[in-house]
Image (cartoon, rainbow, N blue to C red; front, side):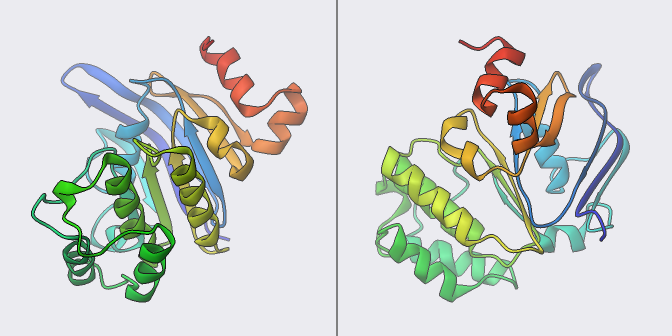
Length: 233
């Protein structure tokens, strides 16, 4: 089975500062992966490179065997950590925008998610709460038939009920041919759904492995292990 993501000696620098430092990683399809680390650890930069929004300075990243480009953008569905929708848009406008832009956008799935999240498609983005906007963004990203879903802080501004809805929507979206990478500081929300975890700090992988094996080996939850590694209280 081909690796869905393969990273070899990846380096990313901004001016003279190294953000990703000689990183090596392989990810298989059919996994839910937690990309975890403190602020400034390189998580967002790594995800943007995988999504084709940034170029590596050195090294190589392959998505489904291909370098980032037109093909990989067609199979990667990326949720940034900011709202990228226009204020004048209604939810329906946003759906139509994604439908025109992405050939793999599943309108029926978007309708199901709109109903599941209890979103009114006539509401304007500008009038939605932060949590509601986040649900709209999640709905758009998960409505694509992608091979790789990259979610950067998917729970921003979302209340506990909304977080559970998002988690369940991610689980329902799972299939053996696609994988989900989730970057979040709220590990207690996602720990139970993670198959693999990657701890990253200063652009380097500190720990990477099967989530259940790491729990058993260390006799700790992933959240407890995170606090131990990064000194979080």
